[in-house]
Image 1 (cartoon, helix red, strand yellow):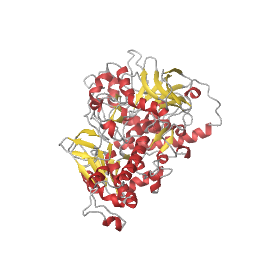
Image 2 (tube, one colour):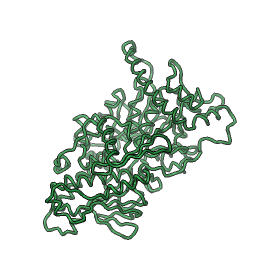
Image 3 (cartoon, helix red, strand yellow):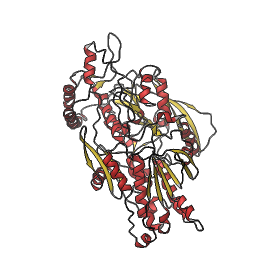
Image 4 (cartoon, helix red, strand yellow):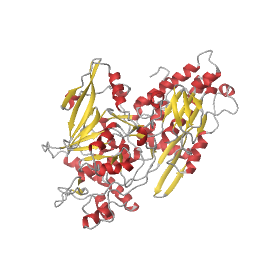
Length: 609
């Protein structure tokens, strides 16, 4: 996953979040938010069994047709929303002007004034807090599905005093995904890259559940949750009503229908995946230390296959290389010479979102000479000793137990395989698309490919202005963006502002047609940032559509180095490679993280924790 250079979230993980393998802080749904519930007629079984059953429900048949590469835009934009030949009315012409990309200097000025507006609002809220009594007005119910980057940004920005906010997600914490690769090898601990949802916005409600379907007509979400009493657990189904719905469930790992991937590969999407990899790594080195094994058997056990050379795959391979040459060299020096990292990629390049010169720098970093501090261990290594091997332009045909079959006929034996090759939709995303029926949403699927099609204001096509979506599960057919944390974060922040400033679902009085969001100026003054946006869009009525500010991308390449691609102005790249890129990344992460530590070897899983 690509790391944004800025706009990173504080990671203030509490000590009671030491373990993410169990639902240590689940609040019973009954006491939190009484809703209609229908227990599933199942025999009481263990919680882990039910979690595995729910996980199996996420498997999508023929998922290859929905594949989206890691951090990559795979389709060309197409005009589906605006018809250039039908601009007969003033409103249509105004909409056409408004959806055009705002001039970059004005857009930057708008962003600056947003910060100024926030400061002014904070002072006003402090002055008026003591004067206002309890608000008895019925609040609009906003239900948010997901706790990823976009949802966390939305929760930070939304006015929970004005709206009744409920978050539904099977994960009750925000996860700092760019550091999952580091957590898998012990560079950081799991508690350091999480933040409880209830801590992000204490005024919001949270329900630990999995959304399964939506009903736009009834304005309700169908959910299922694991309810436990002692060691006995059942799956409970219930519905949650909403006035406005935000679908931000993200994406899941896409295996592209390749046989054996789900059975034999580890993924790198959740905390549980990172923990599984950490345990598997230690198991491999312990197995290879058993006496009477041949050299061939040891090399097979200590061959680590990373499938996918996008940002996630390269960063994990780099972290793993550091782990082997530093910690492993101290404790398993006698078998270090058998360790291998094989990166398998179907295309002809690594890190496809980056500039070619930076791709070359990444390859050079991965192939650098191995440096071992302990001279006794170094003397045991062959000359030359190469850990990392790049296998490009080669597809994986099948993954078997202990062997990966490639498209060129080769078979790669392995001890651990990590799949980092792309994203695919969750069932609730596909169900939402199907529920919205024929029309704009169905027409946009030729481009969206299993993602929810949205308009420039993040409103779901066919959702009557009541349903919003952003992040990896969404797609604007007219202006596609990469599936990165940076994009989702900016979209969540944008929607949080718009909900307070605009009427998001106005209708034309004469035709009943859904109009763009209109500014709601009742009981408030126009903000400075709004004035700049109005000048840029040449519209005093329409709320400014979402526009992405590319702050750059980073990727760790091992041994204290990284590559950075920072866009100062559109179509102009300022490139920073190697050591410089790492220190930019380190400064951003260390400033935001509560605890980022390099633990001793006992912390990385000798005790399998």
